[in-house]
Length: 340
Ligand code: KG4
Ligand code: ZN
Image 1 (cartoon, rainbow, N blue to C red):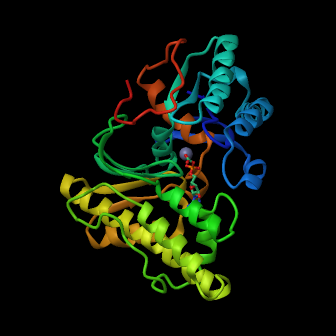
Image 2 (tube, rainbow, N blue to C red):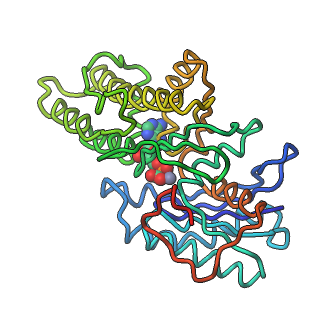
């Protein structure tokens, strides 16, 4: 079965084709991403109107390339597209493209939840993670813990009460003058920094609470940068980035492990753009091992938004015989534990 996946929920215009892997899961045949980062960089964040227009301009070329490299339209068996959560004007571009193609080619289509897409990046691995497990989804808009007993079933265990982890990275990076999106710049600079150099707060440290809070860390970080007597540059900047990254990775991994132990699952699956963070990946690996748990982090290019993860989610749902009705709406909010 060959499935086309389309992703336009935010600022990446992406499409990919997956097919059956010899091991029985989905495998990538093509994966094309057009990043709009340059268009939004002057504004320090995603401008929804610009994002929609960029998707309209790019979607045909991106889909054509993915399908061509994926073996052509004739080989496709279905089309999967992100239908929420995300920016409505952006989602509409991908969904209309998917529906138009589905009508023209007589193919079934599936609206995919973007967060389920992030989690399905793990299905593209040679050795996909086992069920049941705990999933930690960390992106620019989400920081959520789910108990996942089987594919497609997600029970919310904890979530951020204010900022998402990616938002904390991006907002502090902006004040540091590092450009947008800032997470990757913080990660790069942190490589030569000392994560213990700055004492930054950990939100909601109570071990019984699985919710997160990053607004205190964000506010304290910005205050320290603004009140700093020496300029934040050179080694000081590297130390600050390492400390920020450490604070975020520390809280995320601690709570995920506590939740996994409480639920009695064997391991933790990391997903979402922030899953590309080097310290979060290594700390999760180290701490899960110390607690007798396994951890799974998708390859870094599959952590940030892409079409392959949506195609993988679609592949799995088409295998179950599912398809979406023509009149299904796009959804700006769509909790993963409400997939009906
Ligand atoms: O999943 P994603 O591509 O888009 C959303 O669905 O939000 O996640 C984007 C987020 C941004 O906040 C970005 O700064 C963050 O992922 N990010 C990182 C890294 N790479 C991307 N954060 C920390 N370290 C990274 N290496
Ligand atoms: Zn995303």
